Image 1: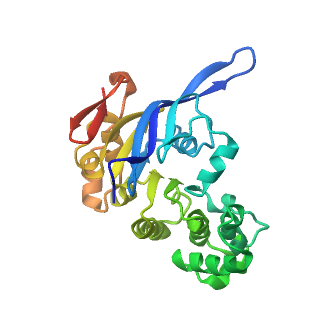
Image 2: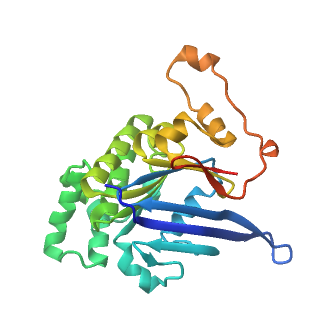
Image 3: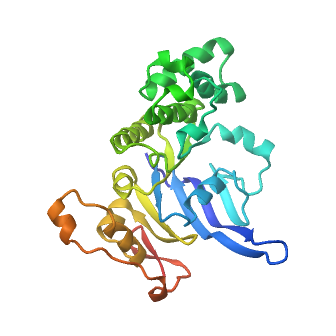
Length: 296
């Protein structure tokens, strides 16, 4: 259940990289003055084109990237400048599922040992209980516990991602950043993984920052949707409101590119193009309808 007190609070965060050589270095804002709250038990979808800053923002929330500016809080605690040792107790509550499950897995580590790693690092179970707990986690994500002794190359793409999800929930977190977790999977498997995320959210009361390109999956899974463009959130609101009544021209263009499973409709419908020259960047988010904000 979503409560009024946010689990994650992002306030005016900025990430700036310096590009070019030593003599011609110039700052480039990848994330630019972004504010976003994620409630307890809430799934917030983050969408936008490649290079818009979605993954960088997700890594900043987990403090895998340092902030160039702004403030970040988790469960009421300011973690903006938290050190590695200060972050360690929070790591069991903040987890991540990456886009490429094969790259996330060590090729020399058995799947069961990979899932058990958070339990060992955080001292959440003794050595004797650990194997039983890992078997339970495999069953939770839809894998046969007899697969625990296998190596990553012996799994399919969908199975690898289930192993990664099992590791993410091993420490019983309250918040997960899912960074495009279905992009590298076959279409037939994507719906299964999204349903697994939904089932785990309902069972464990998880909060997600769900980063994705597939807008149909975002609409199905997420409570709210934030649209990023060039490092800024240009629109955010309830999923139904954003999809049924998109306010920003960029959001309208994104939705017009979503395929329609009807050949006749697909052939005749009009696709919209977004021209940034005709839409100057805004300065602040303004509430247009209850809970639905637009950058103006």
